[in-house]
Each structure stands twice: as C-alpha cells, then as structure tokens.
Amino acid sequence: MTGRLSRRAFLGSFAAGAMSVLLGACTKVVKETVVVEKVVKETVEVEKIVKEEVQKEVTRVVEKAVEKEVTRVVPAGELRGEVLFWAWDEPISDLLKKGFETKYPEVKVEYEMPQNYTQTFLASLVAGAGLPDCAWIDSNFYQKLARTGQLIPMDEYLEPYKADILKFLWDGGLYEGVQYGVPRRYAPEVLWYRKDRYEEVGIDPESLKTWDDFMLEGKKAVDGTRFMSTYDRNANPYILQSMIFSKDGTGFFDSQDNVVVNSPENVACLEKFMELVKSGVLRQSEVWSPDWYNAAHQAIIACLVMPYWYGSEPRVEMPDTAGKWGILRIPSLKPGVQNASIWQGAMFWVIPKQAKNKEMGWRFSEYTTFDYTDPFMQESMDREFVLPAYVKFMEIDYFWGDALLFFGENLRKLAHELAQGAPVNYLPPEYSEAESALVAEMQALYDGERSAQATLDAAAEAFKKLLEAR
Image (cartoon, helix red, strand yellow):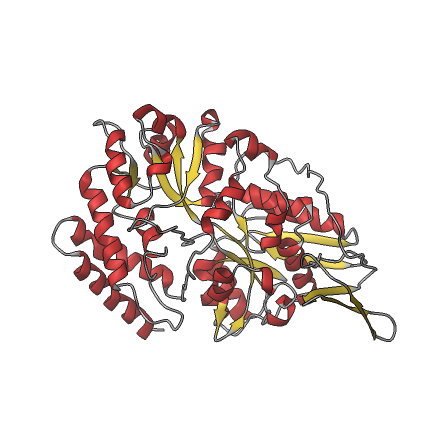
C-alpha cells in the first residue's frame, strides 16, 4: 500500500478495537439471501431471492400492524474472492479492510492510495487499466468522473436504501437523472469555538444567531492581539463559502449547470462577509499554515467556521485543548433562519466499468456505506470525523470513545441536527477552477476597488468561460 495522507489524515496511533453494538431486531439472512423489506400501509412485504443451483423466488406476505418501518441490514453469508479499493486515509482504510474481512473471512481486501489521486483515477479510466474495484471520490471531483461514461450506474443497487439517504446528497450526485456513485458521508459547515475563550470574554454561544450577532459579539474577543475568527484573502474563504452554500445563498451553479454565483442572495452574502473583514473581528492568516494552527491552539482566535471534519485537528494536533471545543450552527443573514450548509466533505463510492471485480466492489461499497449496525463502520465515521449519508446510522447512539473523551459530548449527534435542511450542493466538473477564479476576482474587492456585485459578475463571466471550454 503506497500513497500519501491527506491534510486532514488521522496522524494519531491507530487502534481498531471495535466497540460492541446492540443490533436489535434484524432480519435473519441465510447464505447469500438478499432481503428487501418495506412497509405499505400496515402490510409488511418480505421478498427473498435464494441463489441455489437453479434460482427460484419465494415470496411470503405477512399482514400485521406495525409501529415503525423495518429496515434492511447488509446480509452476511458466504462471500469469497478479492477486492481492491482506493482511498486517501490509511487509518480509515485499515478499519474498512478489517471490518469487511471480519464479516467475510473468505475475502481478501487490499487498498491503494495513489499520488495525485483524481488525476491518476482519470488517467486509469481512460486507459481502462490499473483500476480499483471501487474508489472514494470527493464531491469536488465526483461529477467530473460521473460524466466520463466510465462508471457503472448505481440506481438499481441503491434502490433498497434510497429512502434513507439524505436527499441533498442524493440529488447532488445525479447526472442526467442517473446516480453514478454511492453517497457515503458528508461534513456540514459548523462554527467550531473555544469554550474557554468565549467564557473569558463573555460571549454567550446561544446568542450567535445572525452574522450581525457574530460581528457584534466578536468585538468582545478583539483586544489588539486576539480576534474572533480568521480568513485568508489568498485562498479559500471558509466563512464566505459557508454562506454561499447555505440556505442564505445559491451556490455557484444550479442543477442544470447554469451559473448563479452572482445571484442577489450571493451578493448579500459577499457584502456581509466584507463587513466582517472590515469590522476587524477577523484575523488575516494563511489557512493550514503553522500560524493558522497556532492561532486556534492558543485561542488567539475564538472560533473557526469549518466543515465538521475539522474536529480531527484539535484532537490530533492540539491534545492539550481537550474539553475546550464545541460546535454551533453557522449564523444566518436574517433572524429566524435555522441555517445549514454542506459545502465540503461529501464522498461517493464509484465503480469503474472496467473494474475486474465489479460485484465485489459493490458489496464492499454496500457494507461500508449501509451496514449501520456494524461496529467497525460506526467507528469509521467518527475516526474520519464525518457524518453518514445513510441516516439509519443515527438510530444508534454512538460516538467514538476517544472523541467522546476529548470533546466531552456526542458531537456527531449535534452536527447531524445542525445539518438538516441544508440545500443541494451542485458541483460540476469545473468547480475547482471556478473556486480559484472567484478568489482571484475578490482581490480587487479586498483592496476597495470593486463592489460585491461587480466582483460576482466578473466571477460569473469567468465561470461561463470555463463551461464553454468543456
């Protein structure tokens, strides 16, 4: 296994001691029986397809009153062979491998972490060689791959699970109405704050309902050397992105790839962001730099607007800050809005048409995405510091023990609540280039040479040129 760890890789020691989870009432499955259960009014229909020498179908209908919908658990049974997957976090990959091999002892699992991950995958798709049986793809690049014609459609595979996959993730994965990936995880935008610093300066976390509240209360945290939060004018403005991809904004593109970055809603978001910059509550700092890390570690800044996956950073990089971190809902432009945003952190499993073991690739993707009663998979979500796309995971009150000890509360449950109602995040193949174009156009805005409207109009023209060059 070769490759690199991502910037958000888990650097701490890896211990795969899975915690036992009460499975509850699950359908008993024999060998390769596939069980699909659904509730229609007060009738429970159970269809079983048993693979023998001659395939036959047996249908049993049991009519009875039910209190809640029954669910499907990924079946155990005899499964033999090999599967190769690609990912970019070695500790998590080890956990996925161990979990699948524990459930299916006759299967050998291997994984690779290629350099230049997406470019390597694209090149392998074109060549039709050197491909995995399934692979992680970040939402930023998923559509680029979905539109190549080199991935298998997943709609039929996903039908038993579709009702319990979060809609904003399902819709974001569609291309011309077809699903080419398995939505596994996501990370909503949240406000990570230092409890000790808020208490020190007298900021009530519950008072931060709007960005005006954030600016007003944030002034309490400013003393000449300390600030409320941070931004980087030369890179990704996380606060602005959380606004644009929240209920308050419209994103960069709509579902038809139309450019909407210069919408009135986004102009209002950019104007408010610039108010925050000019107010002095934000500290300029290069994101991911030592200075940026130190500002959070030493509470030089009181909070950060970041995706939920940021939670691995304090635990690994700042172990002496245990118990000092919390998360809040991102503020909104207007009072009364329960804001939510999922700009970054979503991930899909995809299966190449030229994969050697496509069916095994599906079984591995299915297990790692939907087997919510499995302790390995429950733990994997928290080690990645992401949330499951399949909401059945949230029926089990679970939070990885190490994270629970560090933060002192079940942040997974809270983050899930804060994410509900988030809009669909449409990211066409040109998204990364569009993001860079916006950063470039904003330089004149920072320098006071351009209005928010003019900045987004210029960005919209740059976006359109990217689409024209497709």
